[in-house]
Amino acid sequence: NQLFGTCSAGGGSELTQIYGTVFVIDLSKVSPADNAAGFGVLHYFGDPSGQFTDANPKGALFLASDGNLYGTTYYFGGTVFQIKPDAGGHFSVTARTSPSGKDTFNGTYTKIYDFSNDTGQSPLAGVIQGPGGFLYGTTAGGGSTSDGTVYKVGTDGHGYTLLHSFSGGGVFSGDPPGDGYNPQCDLLFASDG
Image (cartoon, rainbow, N blue to C red; front, side):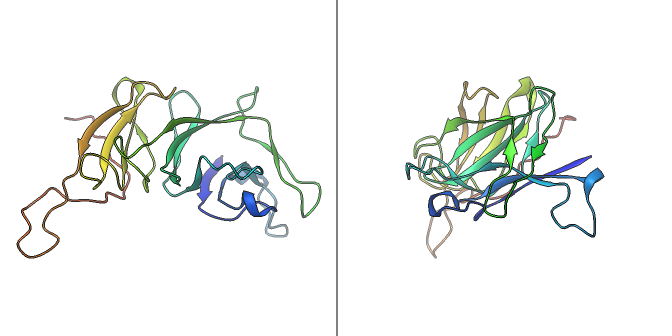
């Protein structure tokens, strides 16, 4: 019994590693007497070298049918990422040994897709899994009019398809009607057609 989540900022002890975390809480280890019991950080966003490529997760995580966690980051254009469990199939963390240290996770973090303005930018929502095992999501910006997109991508980062590019509209008096802009919520997949 585990809970997973993200923090969009903070986490690291160095200025270049304060761009959020992915965390886990093991409910079997939670203790009212120890605030840290059962809690661990699976990934710290930010790069000690200052070469940022992904930061600030905003949307919900998704545990896919392959047993991996998937999520998105917002800044630097945005990404879709994957977190694989350790060799035993667990998302367990070795707790830090000092207050200034970091948790150790033996799984793997991989950035599987980088967004661009053409494909969509800055997702605020997470992903869901739909037909064929693809991940589906939205971006708040980018696309043909920079008003956001709906997309699908494979769990390996391949097969990216832009499903819809929003056209905005209707913001000011006299604007032509559009279909909205800046989608921010997770999608919902309905299998009943």
